[in-house]
Figure: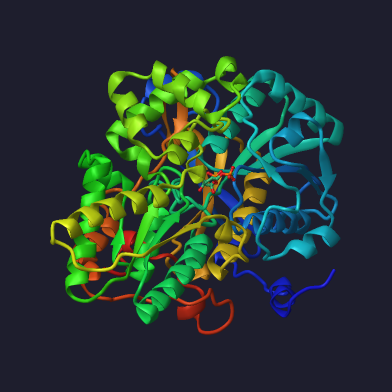
Amino acid sequence: MQKSPLQIARGNYQPKLPVALKGNVKVQEGAATESVADQEEIKALFPNTYGLPVLELVKGDETTYPAVNVGVILSGGQAPGGHNVICGLFDGLKRLNKDSKLYGFLGGPSGLIEHQYTELTAEIIDEYRNTGGFDIIGSGRTKLEETWQFDKGIEICQKLNIKAIVIIGGDDSNTNACVLAEYYLQKGCGIQVIGCPKTIDGDLKNSMIETSFGFDTACKVYSELIGNIQRDANSAKKYWHFIRLMGRSASHIALECALQSQPNICLISEEVEKKEMTLNEIVDGIVKVIVNRAEAGLNFGTILIPEGLIEFIPAMKRLIRELNDLLANNEEFLAMGTDDEKRQYVKGMLSPDSRELYRSLPKGIARQLTMDRDPHGNVQVSQIETEKLLIEMVAKKLAMLKGEGKYKGKFAALNHFFGYEGRCATPSNFDADYCYALGITATYLITSGKTGYMALVRNLTAPAAEWVAGGVPITMMMNMEKRAGKMKPVIQKALVELDGAPFKYFAAHRDSWAKTNQYIYPGPIQYYGPSEVCDLPTHTLMLEKGVIR
Ligand code: FBP
């Protein structure tokens, strides 16, 4: 297979390892833990995995390890660095005992249930070192949550003599990893389950997990593109660019990209919700900036829009909730032939306020709101073209103002959506190093017999050598939330905190970014060169840790 020079060079890159993971390592137990909320309920649901201590990997004595077979699963959306978690796991296992084996379950969690797997050999692993994507074994969104699925997992693990499963996934997949760990303990089948924090969305973080892997690379790719667009906008001086960014519900990606590129506007869904803003108020805010810039002769600019925005507009949220309930397993709706038929049906079923809102939406957006849900029953926000909706509404408002003589500028808009462009990018040094360390860490959690833990690597704003590795009990991150009408134990999703340092920094600067051009052009990810160019973590992390202010 032909490779680019960068592919070849990255294949030879040796991820930087924390000192704690070099040489002989032992697991040190810290204090017992509690879940972040709803302690009694979580304890009752997880009698065997609740209250476990936080773990830290420290220098240990020379030990011999028996060979162990491990299975690995990639779950959910792609995130740069996934391959390196697997490479770290493979190298870690082989380092401790060359007879250990790593099996990859194919196509995500369904591979475990359907017994689709492959043994990952050194030859395969070497092809994927420091590469983006999840193609080494594929990923999927099947939810692992029913006992028959867990039992199918036992069957294949017994057949392959697998002692531990590593699930690389987001908050929902890690919640399910913990349910699986608990079930296997209750059954006494001797299969451990370890999770790893993955998602470009950046919403799997808390007091123990500083960031999920993939967020760094994805944001750097999007920020490069935004910077390039800003340079173009500032050169041509004729377009407003409406740029929607992936990230599902949370606005971490949009916020991080704003911090890296300083656009004229960046909407933050969490703020929209807090201020209970309507769609019209959001549009008015954008129009105000456009009118002001036009008065200064600047008929161009950039606007970042988090993909989950519309779910945070209270009236929209109500409409989406009604649609979720209405469309769940609705055979009648699915059988309808035309979009018009479906639209009429939906209108007939909604409450008066939601009906009014639904009717006011452009047909395309209304149709997107009724498209297939994801396996968790959520609207697939990546399919909803909010940027086009905003362009249409802003254009209308500006035309009205023009008619009234209140706007004399020119408005030409272009829309963009950045998501899939960044999810499989070659991992930045940060993600390559972080993920490899997570994989090695998972190895030690397995060899020390732990289960129900998430691999943990902390102190990430320091040089990689000083990173701290260990494990956090997944139950510690859980609370009870309503999902599909039922209270369930889940890992708390981290949304943008409006009193957190990243948002505060943005809020303190956004007015001046709106008025004048203070664009930053981050340029492409650099893999080789000075550390201050190549190894920097995200602005979000550096602001959160007080490394920058
Ligand atoms: P995960 O939460 O599984 O990591 O997925 C992240 C994500 O890229 C979201 O940002 C996006 O909304 C979604 O996946 C898109 O899903 P799909 O890959 O199914 O189109």
